[in-house]
Amino acid sequence: MDDFQFETKENLLRLPSWINFPISKASEFERIQNLIKKSNIHTICEEGRCPNRAECYASGTATFLLGGSVCSRACAFCQVNKGRPLEVDLQESKKVANAVKTLNLKYVVLTSVARDDLKDHGAIFFTSTIDEIRKTDNNIKIEVLTPDLWGGGKNLEERAILQKERLKKILDKEPCCFNHNLETVERLQKEVRRGANYKSSINLLRLSKQLSPQIQTKSGIMLGLGENLDEIKKTILDLKEAKCDQITIGQYLRPSLKHLPVKKYWDPKEFNDISDFSKNVGFSKVSCGPLIRSSYHAG
Image (cartoon, rainbow, N blue to C red):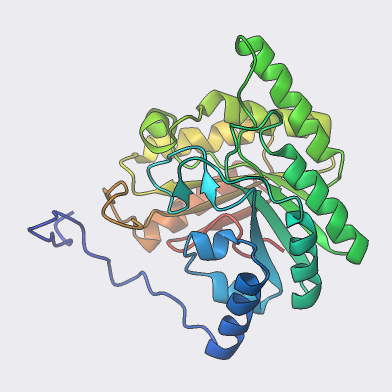
């Protein structure tokens, strides 16, 4: 920690030299942003200000945010707007499918805000959008990045049943990859993922592999929220025990002063060591580095 300087007023760690944001081709970047805005749809690339969005756009990949732009949960790391979710846009799936066609995308990631206000917790957003995309081109590969689908019911047993039912509806559409992020280590879940549960998230990933063993499973975590190396390794092992195939590990970057502060910037060598550990325990694909995000090089 001696290498870092602190800003006196906010007591914040300064951005280290090894975090360099990629420069995009302005014309192409603006074209895609304008199309997204004109279509009245949302992407987590834009809502979350992903540092890699230009690179993904250029490679024919985008991550669409379903269910509106307002999340029913208030996770302390996330830049997506929180509050009372908007009315469901019944044309959303068609709008997304048209955007996919116009952009000539070959690999699409579908994610959504948490919609605890809905009976199916938003599972229909995924199923209907997959259907609409495949009407335009059945060869487009589709990855889903879902919330935990956890909620409702009178007790934990009923919640687990509902979670399984919602998950099965999505898996029955046969996406090429099922992704659900743990975001952080077990100890920090309550602070970071308000309303989420580590064990229910692990169970969702395990259940996905049980229901559809042919579908790749994937999860991601952020570093820099106060975790230690032993906790990171335990999380990686927990994911592997749940038969998770792929993992993404990146540096948490604070979106604003209203969000959780960065406790540590993990350096490139540490990321390399964690990447080697993940590969050695058997993940088929490991994406690990300061600017890695859930959908980075997803295709």
